Length: 104
Length: 356
Image (tube, rainbow over all chains, first blue to last red; front, top):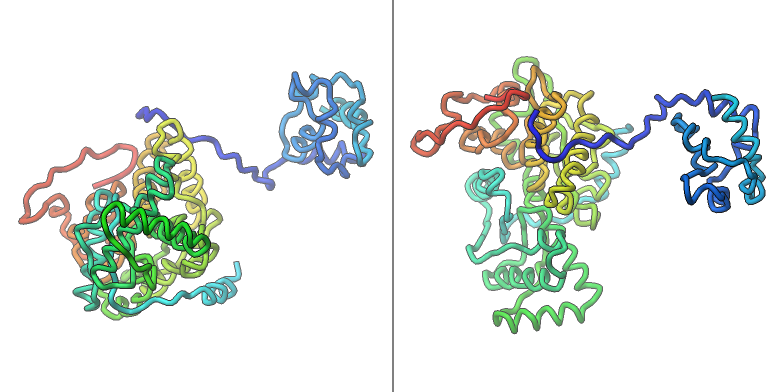
């Protein structure tokens, strides 16, 4: 193969027909408030682990909706619960994280 | 897709195009990439259709490439453009037709800017006078050369020797049309059919008997993008764009692609070789690529010109599968013969994609 000094990047397009939503749906059945998240990011702003690890409940929900792996992100959560105090929609974020961990 | 609905929307965006007396300005790069395209435009305009088309050797770059590469300020580009308009005024013309899509976008942008900021136009007039003692009138009509071929598409169809129809099966050829980004994405009202439903190339395909292929990434950039390709570190982004387009059009099995921009045919053509080298994938039939033509080259084929006089041997992707489908007679042994049948040498052929 010729080395051109550059290569084709993988497309960032998400094929929603190919995404496995099973985990997200299962979590939503156990924590129904997960469905009312509006992705405002208050959880990420209040998260003490976020600046050092990239942990964000908003990102966790988005990743679940796209069928992506969330294990690494969740392993950084200290379960302090500040995100649940900051959430304007009343999403039970701490319970959500524990539920995801139990279902993995 | 509700195709009839799209056609209705397109019809609302027809722009006024005078039928004759045009001042023609060539592209900086097209003559290097696909050298017979502009030659074919002048041939069709003057000799086939008998129109008045004027061009001058004093014409220079419009400054569009440097402007879009951020290497010169817009006021400099404006002064260069003002000089082009002065040459047109001195020649006694008022209909201006550039060959290059980026030039077309550049002219449209500058005329619009002068409309909004007349004090800037006054300053540019002063700059031009100080620089070269010239004055100018703004063109009454600005059109891209593909607009003119679109305008005359039915006249060309009336003289056609080969329509975009497979003579063996009677089926229309499936053609992808790719419009340069600077044609109508900046100023939708300046293009035939606006930005979302440009009809300029689709109209040619339909008039000449072909079938337009609609696919998800139809309006996606070809991948050239001046800041993408010209910086080597960004070329992966450039080819990724092209790859995305080909992956999107592949299921529709197009017979050919036509474009109206200097960069698009080059990158859609050359990147097919690079994609084949990097991934082993080809998008045409039997290991060939999808032939990519400029609209002038396609018009030339429709009118019955010899493909090797149209410079089709300079394409990376072999055009022979398309010529066979159109029923065009050609001499395979003459592919690499130039003027007076002199050998112009054969390129080394790649192994990853079939070529002749």
